[in-house]
Each structure stands twice: as structure tokens, then as C-alpha cells.
Amino acid sequence: MAWIVVGVGYALAFVGALSIGVFVLPIPVVLTVLLARYQPSPRSALGLLCGLGVPPLYVAYLNRSYGGPACATSGTVTLQEPNVVHECIQALDPWPWLAGGALLVAAGCALFISRRRVPSGVPAPNRQAQHGR
Image (tube, rainbow, N blue to C red; front, side, top):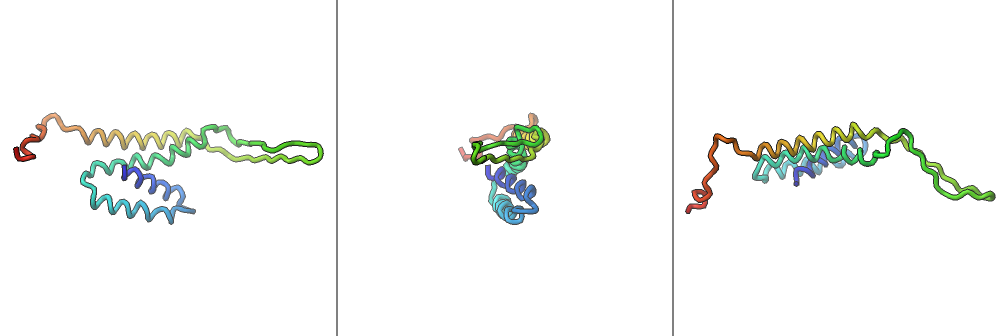
């Protein structure tokens, strides 16, 4: 789970490289050093791929109503004082973001699961021998 947080941090630092990325980047770097030093299983580092996929999935979610410029009108219209606000934004196409994020999350999960399986030619360790029984 901690490696997923590190992956999200790296993705945010990359996406925000020209704005907040410089301030975000030290956090995942420090976490990487700590986790690499104290993490007992290197297999858990595959969570980094899943974490890299989370920000693109969030961007896809934010742009789920894609259709070009999206405009909203708020306020009331009266004859004496029109109080109408028009706000328009340019929405992104969510499909490339969804595909990229889903691919990263799926690859991280698939690699994690594939590393967990024991090859059929290798016998399973004897638990009684490990505990000295």
C-alpha cells in the first residue's frame, strides 16, 4: 500500500512539473528511500505501477462529461438587474487518460499476482522445518 502512495506522488510530481511538481517530488523520493531500505519484500514495490495509474484515472473521472467546451449558467435574470454568470471550460477527452491509468493499474496488479505464484517444479517450503519443530 505504501508503494502505491509513492507512485501517486511521482505521478503528481510529473504532471505538475511546471507548477507544484518541484514541491511534491521530495516526498516520494524520501518515501522511496525509506521503503527500499526497510521493506522486507521487493515484490511489494510493484505497487508503484498501480500508484502511477491513479492520477490519470482521476483526470478521466473529472472529464467524464467530455463534449468539447462545457458551459454553465448561474444566477437570476430580472428586468432591472441581470445577474447571470456564464462559465466555460475546455474539457479533455477522458478515454486516453482512462486507458493509460487502467493499463498501469492492471499491469501492476498482474505483475504482483504473477510474482506471488510458486513455479510448479519448486516444492513448497516445509513450515515445520522453519519453526524448528
